[in-house]
Length: 161
Image 1 (cartoon, rainbow, N blue to C red):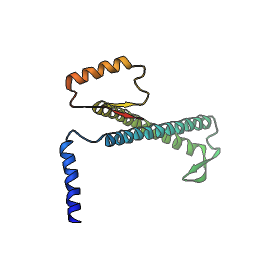
Image 2: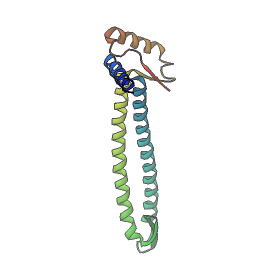
Image 3: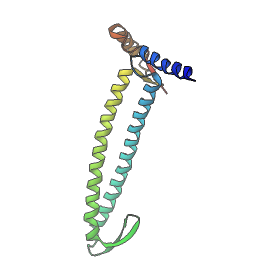
Image 4: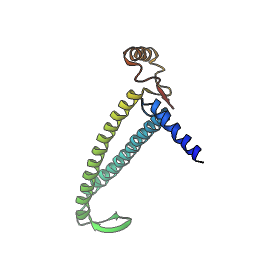
């Protein structure tokens, strides 16, 4: 039992000592996929909030033409509450502004994540499936320049489906 554990311990240290270039291809792909998924979730959340802004705009535009003392109903925390238009209209406008700020923040985060993804792709020479079919000559020229300038840094690229 002790011999097995000592041989198991020596294998990982030997393999990591020889691979000091960085993470394995599987780790690179997993990290890249995780980053792409984070960006997609931000985009879907931003789209969802944009739809809420549109709904708020529609309701605000409708209520502006209505008598301020008229009663209206508003859903607050899953409970339908009766209020007047003059009470609801400022709250809706405030909510719309807050949602707009959140969408702006999400958009800046998505741009940052996009830059991180691009840098990560360039660092590990990641190519997506179907990418570069129309850029065959440009890609080969880039590959030959990379191999001349410092090919030892990034050996083979990683293909992500």
